[in-house]
Length: 343
Length: 243
Image (cartoon, rainbow over all chains, first blue to last red; front, side):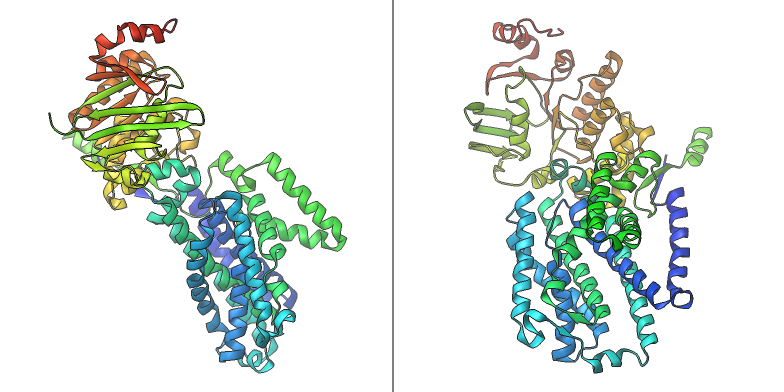
C-alpha cells in the first residue's frame, strides 16, 4: 500500500486563500488609505516581522533573547552609515544590513551560547547595551544624540513625498511577506522538523539524532539577518536615528515579547494575531497614558492565566487549524490497495 | 564470543551523596536481548542516560562496537545506532505522530526526508499507531504515547535499542502483541536492553536478566533462574513479581 504525504489541510487552504486576498487588499492600500493609514499599516508590518522572528528564536529554538534590539539598532545604523558615509541607496542598504548583521551574529553567538536559560536572556541584553554604547561613540553618525538622513538622500528615493510614502509602504509590505515566506519555507524544510522537535522536547530531539546546538546557532544567525533588515526599514521610515531609539529594549523586545506571548508562542500564526491585538489596544487606549501600559500588563496576565499558549494556541488545541501549510499529512492510497486485494 | 556491540567499563555516577552507578560493568553481545529489573531508584534509567549520552558518568567508559563513545553527544550516539525510548514519554507534542517518526528516521537514521515516509508508516502500523498517524502527538493517551516512544526509537534504525518500561499499563492482549513485536525486532538483528517492571514480558523476551540495586548488579544470568534467586526475592519482598 503506497502513501502520499502533503502539507495542505482544509484550514490551510482557506488560510492561504484568505492571505492572498488580504495581500492584494493591503498592496492596494495607497489607493484606498490615507497617509496615516499607510504609516500605521507599515508599523504593523514591522511588528509582525519582528515578532515572527523573535517567535522563531524563542518559540521554536527555545532561545529567549531580550536583546534583539541589538540587531534592530545595528540594521538602523548600518543603513544610515552606508547612506551618509558611502552614498549607498537606502533600498540596497536593507539587504546589505541583513547580511552584515548575520555575519556579526556569528561571533556574538560564540559568546552568548556559552550561557543558558536566564543567563542567555541577560547576556543578550548586555550585548545589546554594548552595541548601543558603541553606536553612541560614532561621532560621524551624531554620537549620543543621533542623526537624520540627509535631504539629498531622501529626495533621491522618489521625486514627490507621496511617491516616497507609497514606496516605503510597499517595501514594508514586501519585507514582511518575504520574512514570513522564509519562515514558512524554513519550517517546512528539514531544519523546520528539527526546530519543531526542539520546541517540543530538547532532550528527545537530541536523542533522535538532532544536533540541537548547531540548529539553534543557525536560527540565531537567521534571526539576526531578518531583524536587522526590519530595523533598517523602521529607521528608514523615521528618517532619523539615535542610540536610545534604535537600541530600545522596550520598543523592539518588550512589546515584541508581549505580542508573541499573547498571540501564541511557538506557532507561526501567533505573532500575527498578537500584533493585531496589540495595535487594537494601542489605537484605542494609548491616549490614557500610563494606564495604557498597566492595561497591557493586565491583558498579558489574563492571557497567560486563561490561555498559556496564547490566543492561537487555544485555537489550535480546540480546532487544530493551521493558516500556513506546515504540518505533514499522510494519506494512504486506498484505491491501489483495494485493487491489489481484488487482484 | 564476539566482542560486544555495547559495553560499560567501570561506570560510576553519583548525585550528591546518592550513588546511582557504582563501578558498573556490562557487555551486550550483538543480537542479544538483555533485561534489567530493580526497585525504583536503583539507577536503571540513569544507566540508559549514560549509554545514550544525556548523563555524563563521573568515571568509566562507554564502548560501542569497540569504539569509546563516552564523550560524544546524544545526537551522534543516535546516528551511529543507539536508539532510546523514554520511561516518561517525551513526544514532540505539537507535531503529528507521523512527523514524530519522520524526525527520528531523517535525523537519527541520517536519511533524506522523502526516503523515510514509507518506512515510518510501516513502523506505525507495526506499533498499532497506523490509524493515528495524523493525530497531534500531544493528544495521545498515555498508552499510545508509550507506543510512540517505541515506534520513534525504532525509526532511528538502531543497532542497539534501549527500551525503558514500554510494557507498563498495557492489557494482557496488548502485552502479548508487544512481545511479538520485540521478537520481530530481534529477528532483524537489533540488540536490546530492556528495563521493565512487567517481569513476565521480560521472561518471554530476553536471553539474560540483570538485577540492579543501589547502583550495582547483584544478580545476573538466565532469566528464570535469576528471578527465583534469593537476592531478588529479598529485594522484591512484598512486591508482586508477576511470575
